[in-house]
Amino acid sequence: MTPEVTLQRMEMISALTLLYEWGVDEVMLDSPQDRFAEVEAEIKAAVPSELPRKMRTRSPEGRAEEHILPANGGVPAGAPVGGAADLSETGLLARTAMHQLKAHYVEGAPILIVGEVPDAEEDRTGQLFSGESGALLERMLASIGVARADLSFVPAVPWRPPGGRPLSASEMQACRPLLQEALRQGRPKRIVTLGVTPLRMLCGEKLMLGRARGRWVDITVPGIEGGVPLLPMYHPAQLKVGPLIRRKLWEDLLSLRQSLQSEQ
Picture (cartoon, rainbow, N blue to C red):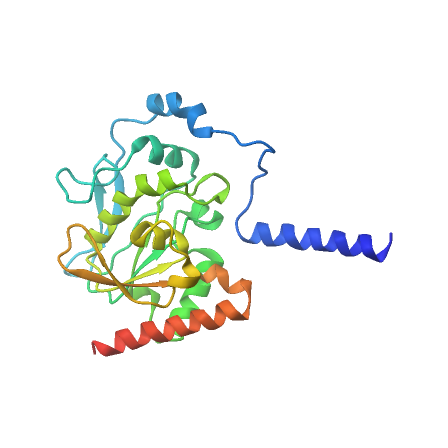
């Protein structure tokens, strides 16, 4: 085997390893397949009329509590969240995922963190920021003197799409009411989005994370008076990309620390 062939093989292995680390765990077909059209009739028959969901909160005494959300995509009847979730879209995600990720609230939390599309470990455990991503996040927060246990967490979407693929535009639109309602229940003082998915769901579908990150913006959350400050950041899993991402993440953490110190 010539050195050139060996190098090409090593490059292919490195590329496949990188794809696996980023959550690509499914071989796609050569031609596009409309899975939504194929299973639409089956979903309508399979999805029950009620899909209860649990969300964790904290009572005034500090006890953890769970609330069952109603079946209309987690949006109470009459709640001003811009419309109920589209069950034809969310139902497919719920059907193919292993677990539904639950929001976790801490009363008076200084930060509410919105995660990315669930990775394989989160889907297996049903827990936000489990495994390596959770460990990296804890180290990031500890570097600015913040403990994970003091913060609230919300998933951008409760279910992992097949193969961990990005959400489609229609799926983002269908899941946005779920995220808005989760934020309304959390009553955040400030929001930190990790990754591009929550940024686009809350601030605009065409935004690029590389340009938006590190800049505080005020967003409107239906059901909450006034604007809520939001800081877009890279996801902990992106630390592997290289030193440039790590430097930018550190800059954003310093901005977050400055915001926290300003209210003390």
